[in-house]
Length: 187
Image 1 (cartoon, rainbow, N blue to C red):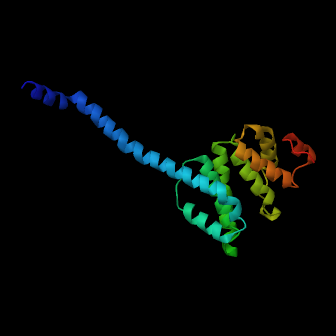
Image 2: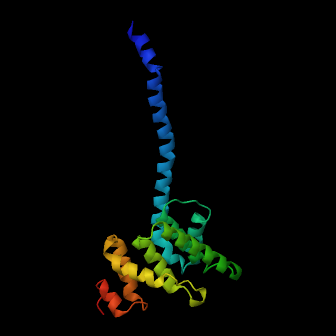
Image 3: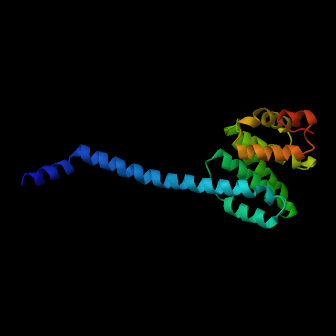
């Protein structure tokens, strides 16, 4: 019979309660955070797969834009792609909204790169947008720096990103034969 009073006294002991309270609080904080991280990862995968199509296809652009326009994301990589979505959407909105969307997109993209300047994927994304942006938009300030960075750090990118880089640079007229040779593209 002495077992029950000891169990009860252990249960209500302050150190026991502190440990359980700490554990409960950690779980309550961690679960939403992990869920948010998982959702961000899903959105990032979708944007990686569909962003280039959003520049040509208004339906794709609208779908991606609706998904990200009012969200607050924490991942710099995801923010870079969100900037890309705003820029892609600028091609499909009314004339008076084009510059607002484009400028907001470039602000988001550039801010993401400032937080993680050594990310090859984000620099590649900005480089491709700068190469394809109309000259009158004057969005080419970091083009040479991004080209140089992508060419020099190409080998550090994941294989899938390396293939995207190869495909883009191989088709692009914005790269010299010497620059293409730096990453193994023979003429």
